[in-house]
Amino acid sequence: LTAKEDEALQMLKNAIPELLAPSKGGEQEARERAWLSKECLLRYLRAHRWSVSSAKKGLAETLEWRRIYRPDMIPSEEVRVEGETGKTFPSGFDRVGRPIIYMRPRLENTKASDRQLRYVVFILERALAMMSPGVETVTLVIDYKGASMRQSPGLATCKSFLHILSHHYPERLGKAFVVDGPWYFFTLFRMLNPFMDPVTREKVWFVDLERQKNMSLEENASSEGSSSSSSASSPGDNNKYTSLLYHIDPVMLDEVMGGKIHMPFDHGPYWTQLLQETGGP
Image: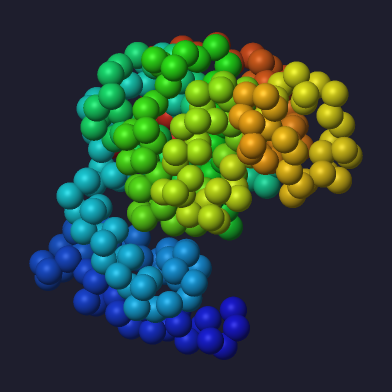
């Protein structure tokens, strides 16, 4: 940290007592003090461009949200039905150690509801619990292959998730890969752009599985950071295309996306193991 950044961190640390829940002591205060770690404070400072007052306001808003929403205490039985088809689940790690969360809209099994959103938050919290020391971000792989417009999340659901991610989990997204995005996704993406932080937008990459077959890792490395026309499905856009294999080792990637893992989803054993490994409620 620079001298100014370290000073900002110390100022935010000094503000912790006034950020805590009004109740004196107890389990709630202990949980909030544990959450307000040095790493957490730094994430909020980076997200708020090192403005102490802005970061403090963001922390206060998130703490208030956490007291009501209780994201780390969502009962597994409350959201269990949302996970039965394997539409959203964490599995494996990318090449820099980030937990991978797979999202597969074609396996949607419920109607839009608050429980759907709580399930995504539940899975995000499980992924955070899977992180090794030094890792702070997750990777999203959103597989649109075979998904219809009816099965895909709508604008309202996407906006709600983006709000939670940007306001209450700042600096937690490493990269997001949209696999075989259909034409209607690009329309939705354009509608979401005004609500998306520019930093978050830069973390979104697109994957065309047919194109990936002919893309070597060396070619992918040389084009990293460049943009290419996103195809006739999305005229006028310049979206960054990449190969998942450049970011995720084949032994950690589903075979349908070019990896080496055969991933049949058996919800019962998977759910039990997930809760055991992440200490979920």
